[in-house]
Length: 381
Image 1 (cartoon, helix red, strand yellow):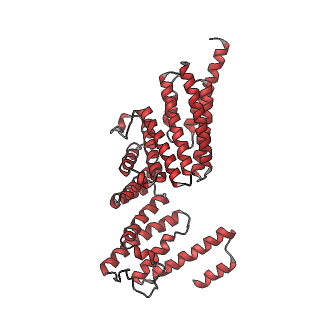
Image 2 (image 1 turned 90 degrees about the horizontal axis):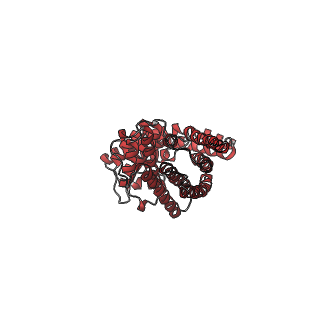
Image 3 (image 1 turned 45 degrees about the vertical axis):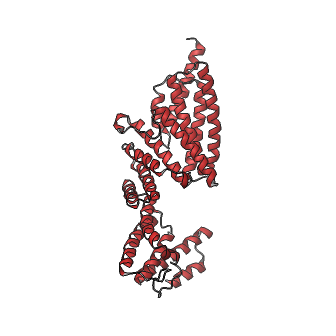
């Protein structure tokens, strides 16, 4: 090996280690552990490809962090990521035609490239406002995630191996994340009429099955998604079971708590929708009369009261976990409970939440409560 070749080899080694370090130390810690381990097992990649991959990972990292903050700029950088992916794809094809890449290198590159295109499209879908276009982009993202599963694990049509123990931890983690990415794209972005909920349930069950070694806070998201799939399917009992499982995995999750509270609320709302439609129109002294002119029976009153009290508990817990942020669900539910029971404690709860909302709104508007609002609130107590 001459001096130029040795220098080139050193440069490739430096860039390879830089890429591996980026994958190992990435804050998002999604499928990167899998690719970091695989990168160590293949022959060194050409410098031109390594440089482009570092650029791609920088764009992914930035898009991922912005997505986590709820910023639409994640979609902007996602578009840059798509452009960089296309450029990298051209370089890979050129290198392969020149026989500068072997099949193991190609498999690695195709897998991570399909994954990143899926990720960038996911971020773009999230920042797209038009529902139809959002759904279309999400479906494209799903196709790339499914292609990743096929390239890396020969998994097609969600035919996952039944025994995760046959794979190492990094493989299990990668499959879990990919399955959940597909499920999440369907639940969050795809138009409801285009979603196969049975497919989504299978994906999220796989994510839970393959995530035994993962952080419970991550697994909470998988369980909650599974609950959402059952919820949309109309299987309330199964949905509640998975929402509770999600809460047990991560008791700090305000989203899991919200889902449980919403389940109990919806149990009543679907059966007695008129209670919610008229919650603020009924005078406290009037009886609860349905649009058909029927008063609630003692059994119906008990069913509504018992279920909405459970809903209140979980929505209060959500409010606590969100640092006291006012939840309108509580005002509505407590008004219904007062109208049914005529128990003043529920009326006091309604007033308390209105007071808190006024203070919060004042803080948001001016940075501190307006003096006249403070006096008005104080006089009402």
